[in-house]
Amino acid sequence: MTGPEHFREAETAAQHAEGLVNAGDPEGLASVWAAIGQVHAALALAAANAVRRPADERAWADVAGTKLSGGGPEPGARH
Image (cartoon, rainbow, N blue to C red; front, side, top):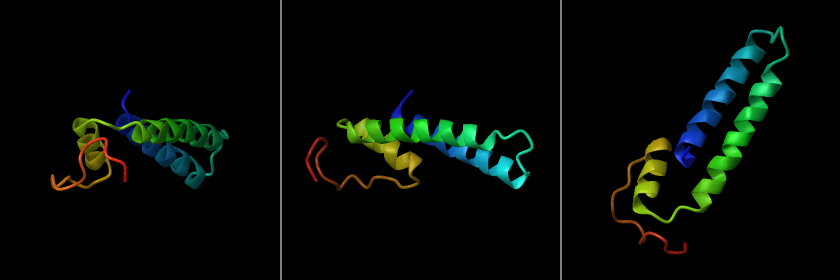
């Protein structure tokens, strides 16, 4: 699973947890889904910190809802 895929999974798990909380969470599963979302978010963050390829940068931009203009820093450059 890629970093952007982990990011999407984190969002999905968080939305599922929120839906359970809003429904009164009759089975107490909201905290489980929140924990799953936290794991995916941590893995996404680790992957984002390791990005060094232009294709990865584009995938992150896509998942974040922005598109790269191509005028940014060179891949692998320190910011």
